[in-house]
Image (cartoon, rainbow, N blue to C red):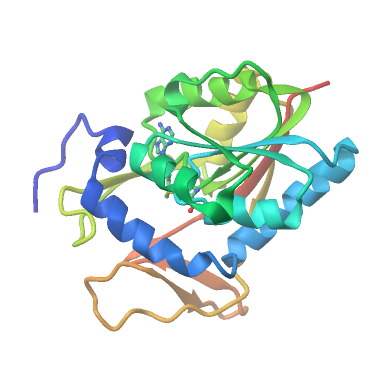
Length: 254
Ligand SMILES: C[S@@+](CC[C@H](N)C(=O)[O-])C[C@H]1O[C@@H](n2cnc3c(N)ncnc32)[C@H](O)[C@@H]1O
């Protein structure tokens, strides 16, 4: 196992073409049927659109990858105006070439340095914040705040825990032989960072997955599996790590 490095950044993850292609292969199964967490994100988008009374709202999916999620958004909400961004040029190229994604704008943009001429009503970050080191997290939150119009909303799914505890985990596996650095931040860190960026009080909703996911028989394959608790809830594991998946909703005051 390589030594832990002090200077790991989100660029290690996004430039790891082998890890990325394994990830993309794994995503193919969500093209037809949205994953359970995507279904809840669709409900949160539905709620935001209804509250805004704006069926043709502009929505940005930041860190869209292969776009299985934004495609489900397009099908569920045909009037929304959709943009997907990702730092990985290969996924942007393949999204642009995919006829199923026609009508969605795709741009190669780094969330640490993003600007748009026109603000969005809704920004979604679906598991794309966990790669940012603490010193970049604030910058990205501020960039997101800047591209949302007053009255607009940020909806995200990421690792968030209710304790005042910040976890940084280097996850070495056959998928990521050089290590994949994951940040699991507290609600408090999110609350403070969002307040500095001008968001109102965020709402945190832990993701309770409604289905059992079996452990892969090959221990080298680090797919999510679930463990049932005594009260019937399911813990979502990434190999040996418990993943505190949580939804966040926050608005920029009108
Ligand atoms: C775990 S994947 C999630 C992809 C997708 N949202 C989904 O739920 O399937 C994280 C994505 O965020 C993208 N990403 C990471 N850092 C980024 C950055 N600085 N700017 C834009 N995209 C970034 C990665 O390239 C990757 O496609």
